[in-house]
Amino acid sequence: MIDSSLLRKTPEKVASSLRSRNERYVSSLEAAIKIEAEHRTLLQEVEALRSKRNALSQSVGKAKAAGAAEEAQKLLEEVGLLKSTMEEKEKSLAALSSPLKETLLSLPNLPHESVPLGRNEEDNRPVRFGLKPIPFDFKPLDHQTIGERLKILDFAAAAKLSGSRFSLWRGPGARLMSALVRWSLDLHRSAGYEEIWPPYLVKPEILEGTGQLPKFKEDLYHLENPGKENSQAAGDMYLIPTAEVPLTNLVRDEILPLESLPIKMTAYTPCFRQEAGSYGKDVRGLIRNHQFDKVELVWITRPEDSLSALESLTEDAERILKTLEIPYRIIELCTGDLGFASRKTYDLEVWMPSEQKYREISSCSDCGDFQARRMNARLRRTPKASPEFVHTLNGSGVAIGRLFAAILENFQEKDGSVAIPKPLVPYAGFERIAVSNA
Image 1 (cartoon, rainbow, N blue to C red):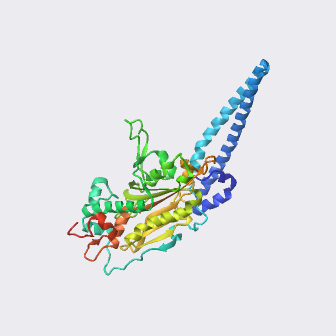
Image 2: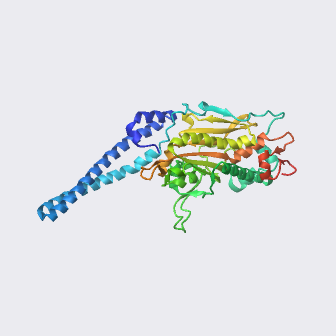
Image 3: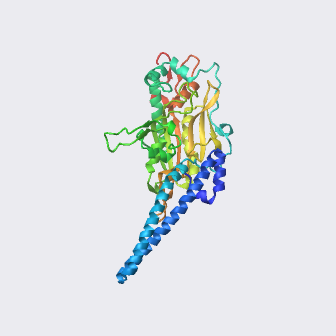
């Protein structure tokens, strides 16, 4: 959530910033400015009435103590009138609070001034390249064809169980998936991340805290009151679309001591997304599934540290690809392609030989205080200092299914086998997947 005081202090700057994302946000901003002004005026009136009522109540006490019964009675009548007026004003204030919150929640984060201007992904700019693609002396196959020929990917079985856009791994494929998870977590723990194993079902307010609700409700899997027989679990719940959601919300409603920052967390989870609006897009293989696996990285930092933390977070995700020697590049997203909660983002993209193009495998974002305001997550610099909002960052470290796909395509060999990157061999227990051992 953006700072509502900016709507009063710099409305033109906010409008220009939102316009750089998408023109459609300006109408929401105008509505927010109008409602916020009405809300602020009413709040000031209520506070003034409350102050006057308190002063009159003290005067009533003094009049009674002085034996001035008639004066005390007049003052009590005035207090009663004030109370009635104040109750009406408070009702109007409460009626404005909900639409004000809804409007503010609909506004995306403001891009950082360093983010390049642009309308869509075509305006994103490359930052750096890792290992360059190695040409094949044969026509490379796509990962689905490779996986099915080796009998390590079984999309037909997944469809029988769950429908389209689900995946199932068999034998060496399943072992390679678990190896990727365990190896990735070990690498991130060695870089100072605390490993977390969070719940996969969360309450609505948890998704609101990180920005998935209300904006992306149609993409979420919603369970209505799954805990009817358990009073502690009663209420609607959602399957997590990413481990960013539970990890970031661990600091919800907290006031953190300065010395505890930065907090660095990692977690492996399955992730669940309906992919609403992506009908017909990337229907083949592992690129866009309803359930997928991901290792997530989350940082909680001081405001002054978040931009440098984004560089470190991106390097931590990049280390996965660099160590496995998979061709990749890093791009910086332009204003028009930023995610809803992000103020600055780097995407890591792996090379897919079958398509002759790069595919996103990680998105590393600095959200500033946008999520912290929604979660009320703060820090206190000194024991007597006023609390201030922390900054939050997140990134995939990385999407495991897409990493699996990139390995199949980049390490395929002419005889149809796939070599396993050397760092994974101790975790997987084999050096190659061929028809004979699949």
